Each structure stands twice: as structure tokens, then as C-alpha cells.
Length: 155
Image (cartoon, rainbow, N blue to C red; front, side, top):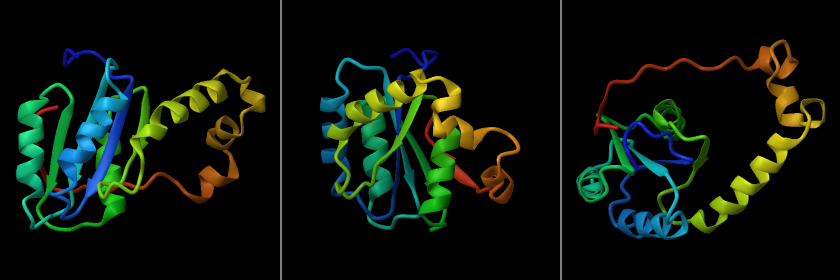
């Protein structure tokens, strides 16, 4: 994938001390999304076990697919997810846990379901209705703003 091309799918993966599982997870994602335009955004939430070095190697081996973001200390999963979402360029964004608890095999089914929902008329789509400005849910829970200092690999 050329850097200027928008990926079909962005996988956001927050992690803390998951160096051992990352190569297996990336290989699994690569198999599931073979032939697709995708990116994997690994957000290292202050790991101490060599996770960042593993991300750097994955980036060196797959520079068009792998984006790495490193926090100087542990800020928590929510901050890592928010940062990953901010970096995501995909038409569809999915999250996976780095500990192999979430199956990348579910990504194509999730994509199909999202496309089916998107094809529904807006007045029949609950997700669209909830995101309309002025919806009570939106008023009670405005988007959070959080700024973190981090070191990232080039996108």
C-alpha cells in the first residue's frame, strides 16, 4: 500500500508488556487481511518488556502496514485507544487486544456487518441516529480531549 492510499481497515492495538504475543498477532492479522489495504497501529502504553523493540522490528519488516506509538509511561487503555483512533486512517477502524484474546478472524465479518448497517437508510440506522448532533447521548457524553506526549514511528 502506498502511504497516500487510504487503508480499508485500521487495527488499533493498545498494549502493555506484550512483546511475546505481537509477532504472532501481526502474522494472524496479515493472514486474515491478505490482499487488502490495511494498517496496524500499535500503541505501547509504557511497556517495560521490550514491546517497543518488537514494534520497531514489525515496522521495519512491514513499513506500509505498521504504525507505532510509544507513551513515555503508562497512561491506560483508554488513552492508548484514543491515540490510536487519532492516528487511524482506515475506512473502518477495529480494536484488538494484544494478548490474542480477540480473534482477527472476526474482522471480515465485522466489516460486512458495518457495510450492511451503513447501507440502511439513516432513519432506520440506530448508530446514525445516536451520532446526530443534539441527540441526548451526545450531549451527556461530549468527545474527550486528551493530549499526551508520545514518540511515534512514521505513519
